[in-house]
Length: 562
Image (cartoon, rainbow, N blue to C red; front, side):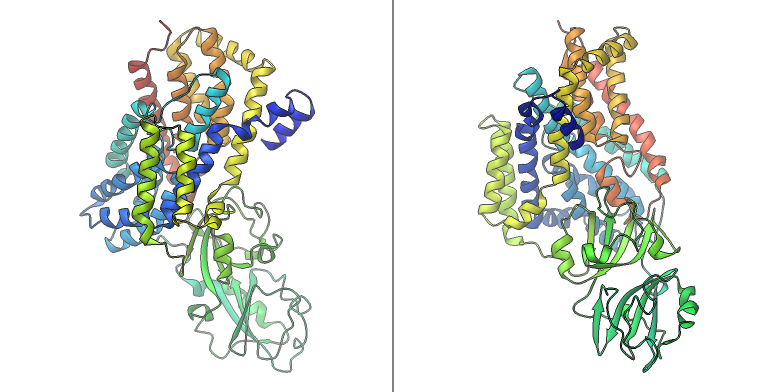
């Protein structure tokens, strides 16, 4: 999107002010402010309190699903669903174990419920705010109110939960083993450097220990001290204990190296020992990770993140090939070993969608009730027209900071820069489509395909956005289609409102693939899911929600102007 913005500006298709107009759009600023408000709820422990009170002890799977619906739907209606799902995942994992339920039967419903809840209000998802902001800028209309989309979003959310309640138990896998790295010993190898051997005094690279096949050097233990994220220039000493990650069969290859010997006690792995200065971290790789597409050995992972990859799981399965040669993909679950500083540096980094650590940052529970009060006041002030949604979000974000619900650093980290830049830049592409006549050209052709039938046009709108959402981001898909739909409705004398609601709903209702929506990707690893698990339940869910949305819009909204 930024490349498109640059081309449009340099080529003169858009003026400088037109190219940069998206960065000052009220919808974009509202999204940014709501990120901070959501972070305030998260860091004050507001979600934890709600979860602990409502989850309880269900008697069966369907009762457990109902207990997930109750907190997640209202939370996602007023907060960005990413922090909601991130907070709920560890809670659901522990809760499912306590109640003897497979996490794989709960985590996809968690993601889907968050998506459905986000469609209920204008601020439930950034897509709604962005579409409303672009609609205002293109047409000059005041836009939609906080609860205007609730008339369609609420019944769709209810129908979606009914589908999940009755259908998901038959379509979701029952996988009791939810953690892809439950057996760390299988992934670790330990050897010792022979005292006075030929490797003493040599660096890791000179000793030939950096580019071994099927194994990867994790750390060196020396005189009761652990050296993590070892560099290639680290010098070896006699009796150094080397810990490797990779295939256990590779131990024979290590023992063939002159100067390497098996440790005296090989049955016990040092990774089973609790030591200060080291922590195990499980992360899910996001589509925006800088190391994406690179082999672990070539990605400079330890230099970039100060952490070591111990193991990789993909689609819930262990990858037992050459660890250093595995190319990192979005959705991979990585088991990392890092210093505690890694958590403070990377916990909110968008390279990783999810971070599970043994010692995590404790929320400030004393501010939980206050953070909820700030959110409620912001929502009510916008709902009753006391102030605009933009001002309500900005004041809410400011109060979260001023009252200590979160720190300035946490607020900065909560701003999803990728989302913000994509939204801002996509406005320029939408404007260019309109200014150059491309929107008009596409509109004419879609009108011809629909043969002037308003219902067929509504169906085509929903299907087009739904497909684009699986290919590009949901925000980009919505912003690209909106000017085209406005052009169509103007020419055909149609009521634009139901078509705009169709865009909002189609852009958010992405269930068929783990990559279609961010929360789907977040639950992929923890749920031990495969790609087909999403297709099996997601395709019927997409068809059901799409049909329900178009039907409700057709029955209760006039498609043509009076």
